[in-house]
Image (cartoon, rainbow, N blue to C red; front, side, top):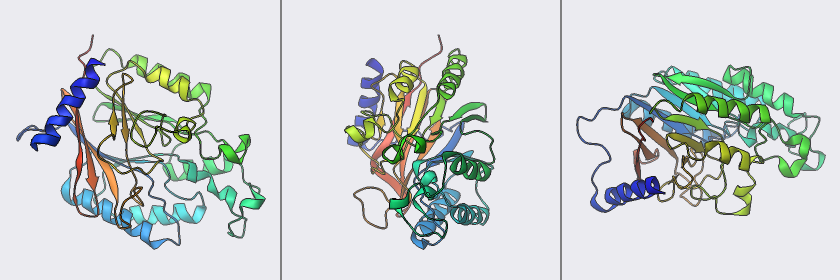
Amino acid sequence: MKRFWMVSVITLLVILTGIPATQAGDTPRMTFAVLSDIHIQSWHLPAQNKLRTALRDLASNFQLDALVINGDLTNGRAADYHTLQNLLAKEKQLPVQQLYTIGNHEFYQAFHERNGRFSKETFPNGETDEQAIQRFLQFAGRDKIYGEAQVKGLHFLLLGSEGCMKRGREHMDNACLSQTQLDWLDQKLRAAETSADPVFVFLHQPLGHTVVGTDNWWAEAAVEEGQKLRKILTQRPNVFLFSSHTHHALGPGMVDSRSGFTAVATSSVAKPARRALADSQGVIVEVYDDKVVLKGRDFHHHTWVQRGIYPVPLTPSK
């Protein structure tokens, strides 16, 4: 609770005084961007153009060490992945490390017949969780839904739904995390406890009653093993959980530290909720020795999101 009030006071001072979250000459040890809900489909040019704009804003204004796209990359179809792959390949200034998590829309081939026609009535249209997962893994260049990457010595833990289709259509948009995946996360976080370095965890679906847009029954059910996941994360103050899915616009409430870890919302590149049609948002993360600074970015206007800068102090190791 003490740490939550510290974050709140610092954030309030930034909002009221306009003092930047970092001082001149204070160089971060690492900078990365988190995008989400880009919703690339082979036929949908507006989403493709928004992603190009976001990537070019990043390339023009930041020296990124990594780019994370936290789910809802596509609508799950092979043609969508092909379009996204081609789009990324044409952006020459992207960081070498590009990391991806799976979202609920990666399973949406199940709503299409084999000829491509959208058909909820015939769900799952011969599709399985395993087929959807394999298309994602082939694109991401991994052999498992969850995994670890290191960026300049810091840990990035990528989580993802192992498929809810088998539980019925009403579960399709939720994250289903196996006990094996949860145990793996717990072990990784235990191993990192002796260090004061932050650990960055990524899952498309949010935990309920954390960041803005999650104080409702829908968000509470978004991670079917939510109570287990929360228990693993709680009282790990240097752990940052990045979630997406709600599309909620960035600003007040995009960062929450009440549960002893820091939850971070990432909005949407394709369509932030309740914003103008042209709007597009994501998060820039600056890592310092004593803090992590989370900055909401407005890609359409090439500016910071108003009231969207959150410096979070790191807790020294025991």
